[in-house]
Image 1 (cartoon, protein in one colour):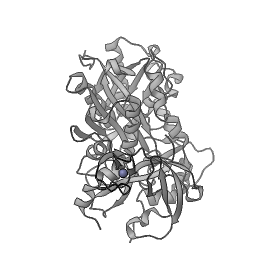
Image 2 (cartoon, helix red, strand yellow; image 1 turned 90 degrees about the vertical axis):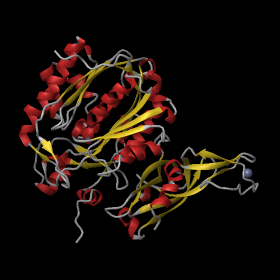
Image 3 (cartoon, chains in turn brown, purple; image 1 turned 180 degrees about the vertical axis):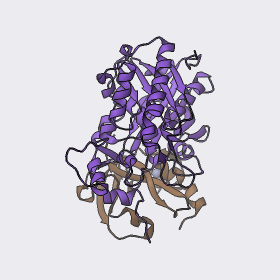
Length: 132
Length: 354
Ligand SMILES: [Zn+2]
C-alpha cells in the first residue's frame, strides 16, 4: 500500500488530471512523462487535460481487493481523452448495464479509498456520463 | 436599531454553482422500514438526496465550486480565500478547504477555513467573504455551503437529512451578477439541535424547533434587514428560506407577508430534502437560474441552535450570459435515481459489521 508521501506526490496528477505536452511534436501524455515517447526528447511542459472523453472499452468488477469491496459492483473503463491519451479509470454515477462503448464521459473528483477508519481519505479522478 | 451589515466597497456574487448527488431515497421507503406504510400519510418531503458511496462534502464542494468558477469566468489563482460551511466535514481535524483549494488549482497563495455547525455555516462563510472583499483584503473569495447530513435511523430527521449545496465566487460589484444590498445576522442561544463530540447523530428539540427557533430567528433577521434597507416583501421577486421541510418556508413566508409564488422557485426541499448548510444557498442558485436583471432576492438561512443570516441581493444584467456557463440546478434535481433503504444503509455506514 502506498504511504502518505507517495500519495502526496501524486496529488496534482490525481486531482487535476495534470499531464505533460511535448513542445516539439505536440503529443499530450497522461500520466505525465519525463521523456516524450515519440521524439525521445525532454522538451515537456505541464498540461492540464480537459477531462472530457469517451469510453473505449469497459468491464464490470464484482470481486476485488478489500480496499475497493465497498464499491462493488463498479465499472472500470479505458477512456479516450479528447486530447489523445487513453487512460484507465473507474466510472461512477452510472449503472453497469447502462455503460456503452463510445459513451461520452467527463472527469469528476471522488473518494478512491480510505485507509481504514483512522487513516487518510484518498481522492482521485473517476469518470461519469457527461453532464457539463 | 442595529445597522444593516454592508461593506463600504460594493460587493456581490460573481459566479454561483450548485451540486446535488444523483441518488434519492423516497420518504415512503423510510416509512416502510420504520413505521409501516399507511394510507394518506403526510411525510415532510417526497424524497431526499443521498450521496453516492464515493462522495462526501469535499467532492461535492469541488463540483459546485467548479460550476461557480465557470460562471465567474476567472482563473482559479485569483481566488484568495476558500471558506467552506458544513456540519459534515469528512475529517474531524484537517480543513476541507485545503483539499478543495488544491483540487481547484487555487493553492498555495490562499487562505482556507472551514465553518461548522448546523444549517447556517454556509451563509456564515458568505458573510465573511463579503467582508473580506468589501474590506479590500482581496478581490475574490470562494465560499461553499455543502452537507451530507445524517439522521438517526428511524428518527424524524432521517426523512429529510439530505446531501447537496452551492458555491459562490464573491467579488467586486462591478463584476457581479447579483449585488449585495445588505445583510443582517440574528443569533441567540436556543439549543434546539446539537451533537456532542464522538456522537454519530444529533439530538433535537422536536416541537421546540419551531416557534422559538426557526420562526423567531428567521422573522427577526428578515424584518431587521428589510427595515434597514427600507424594503417590503412586494419589492422581492423571490425569497429563499432555510427549508427543513416543505411546510416551514411557506409558514414563515406568510408570517412575514410574502406570497407563496415568491417562495416556490427557491423551495427545493420537496424534491431533495433538507441539505442543511447547503439548503438556502442551493435555493438561491435555483432562483438565480431564472432571475431577470433588476430582480431583488431575499435569502434567510437558519441553523438550529445557531441563528439566522439574512441577505438581500439585486440581480444585474450579467446574469443572462453567465448562467448558461454551468449546469442549472434543475439539471441536478432531475438527474435522479431512486434507491432502496438497504442500499442507503450500506452506503451511509448504518450497518454494523460484527
Ligand atoms: Zn514529442
